Image (cartoon, rainbow, N blue to C red):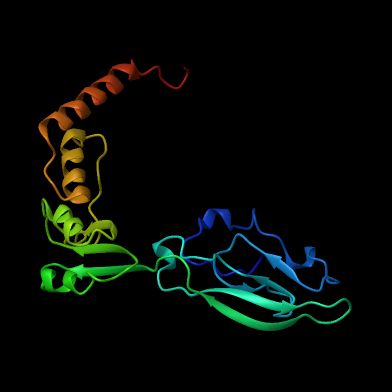
Length: 217
């Protein structure tokens, strides 16, 4: 519904004006309207707090909801009377999600990771590094098997005037770009056989392009 607040985990393009409805479309005579789709518990704009609500998701669905509390609501609904909220319960089922960011060059990484060895939920770890760290992901996964996602964050590469360098897609070497992507995203060195497979696929794509037929094609 219009005015709903997202929980940082929904696909925002599913919640644009093309998908939302006005609260005017909900029946005013209803005692209680339970609505779904939005993951964050909240009332519905335009209705009294106890007349229409999103209960929200019952567990943290992804790391965009890390730290969010989940609820169920006990209400008393009687014909021709306002709905009464009896109690809200914090839901404790499911595993807690936690996202942590570590600046590898400024932190004792082993000491920091050790503090999460007994964490019983799921972890997403973002590692701020200046350059690729081959093998680091595997080492962390061995120490923290509850780490579902491990990502590298690199400093932005900017020009002297503070703006990002323009990329000439016509001049870029895709094999070099793939090796750089693999190093930055996977934190390792691309194996020769994987690069060879990539180059074979790239050659197939280039062969399928054929001659440029121009705008009249």
